[in-house]
Image (cartoon, rainbow, N blue to C red; front, side, top):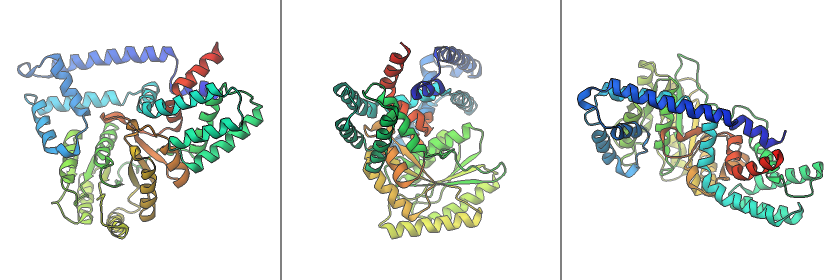
Length: 421
């Protein structure tokens, strides 16, 4: 069985699975509507269109510069609906998000990588069409295409070596089927024999897990914290947030807005406070409330690397003193749209703190999604989550196979159809 056929069966499934999912989705949608009709008091019952808006407000991403406006909008949207009804709606929506199938998650990767695929795959398809034979000229042009997608020089060279070896081993003469081989080798390069790359180091029940977020301002760090809190809460965990970015104007307010949206408590002090003191208060509060996970925000803009190092060391020292072996994860938020600049940021933060994983935001907004491979291969830091859109559940654990499928979807499906025919 070819690589892509195995991949498709694992991640996409057949028509029967998709039909079953569609029927299930329709049934669940009707169940939600019936539940809302029963639970919302008669005097505040709104038309169907307005009810849908109440549900969707849970999935809207606030813009950093309009925090106060977002709060007012929330009040307006929720006007007339009591807290009990809102809580019930949130629980129903969260329950639906936990039921995502392999097929639906794979489609998120496919949709989220559309810009990269449109740019990258069209060039690969053109290359395959122009070169009927796999020769050195073909490999040289393929190198250029991969570099333009920000896959990274080292990764491209490694991939070229693997492709040349595989072509020689299988005695491949023409370019038909070459995309499946490229896909297989990209997955091999990313995973490098390691397992559970995306698993968070969540402690056993009863012990507090501390996750520290780092990253420069403007990469979507606060938004990502909110989405991760939503994800963990939907898994049944009690989550709290610590507003440790006390230097940026509006950062505390923005995190509090996300706390309200997700329904988690935010521990904060006044603007300009000592971030380490915020962490101390947050850990004490999390322990007192028997929280499962504490997610800590940190400052993203300090004068120089020395200040950054000193501040993060101080925060780390306080956390580890209050919770042994914490922080259990140090996640670096990077903006995928910045391309190679994201790689530079990752190198800087890796020098000043023990980064355990990357959260790559805005992957759906770039045509150079190959930066995922460059970060992994050059810095040996796993990408644990990727942002594939603006909805709450568009923050997904990174999956190398789904990522490669998203890059090559149309071309690989065409190759598979030709094989089956």
